[in-house]
Image (tube, rainbow, N blue to C red):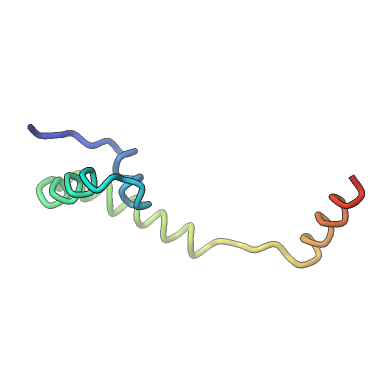
Length: 72
């Protein structure tokens, strides 16, 4: 039986949130399905862009939040 994978399935696969059986099935599908490969490439590209553009708050912002929490 040929299983159809959704974009959500591929996202879960990209984030390593699939079961072992799902992982095997998706890997096999990626080998045979050019459209699925393209979806996977786009998703991993977005994930990489997000990870490379992560910002951290300034120490002043952290201190302001902590001070506010202490007063509340």
